Image (cartoon, rainbow, N blue to C red):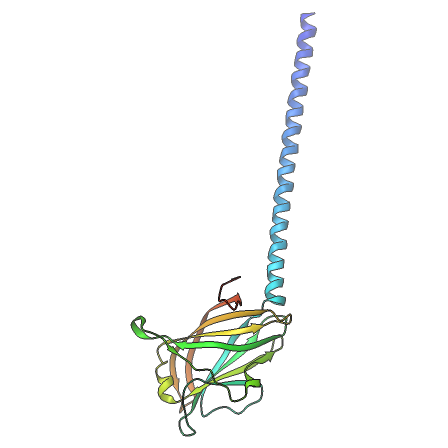
Length: 217
């Protein structure tokens, strides 16, 4: 009788061990499924963010730049007078803006200023246009348009060796407004040779709010 009870006890112990092993395997499978679900959720989130950036959030990249004497007379260009000038003393900085997203966007310069030495007050740029209907310009997906800033030589001479902080208002195809800021590091300007060295950097896009509160970065 004792031997029979021992065998039964051993059998029950083996069955308990088997159940424990099966339970552990089930828990491992559950953990693996949970990890896979989390990874899938992260991929979906990244895809949604990528789609948002390409199809909803507008963005322009400065892909070229040049300096000119006088004011360029071209189609598909916005021209802003940023300081006083006359016909004999007008020079221009021209930036090429490229729409790198998959949606049409409208671009308008909001403000610009030249940084000063020793943290002094920066020099604000005026942004006057001859025709109020020409204050903004549309850029289809993958295409480029130009924006011109013109003034007298003395005004722009102060920007050489300094940074220019520029902000644009961007409007997507749904009419949503965004604010894009960037910094232009101006290393050299030579109007006579039409030569310049400018480095765009520090791009940042935020949803635009009239109360100037940041809604999204």
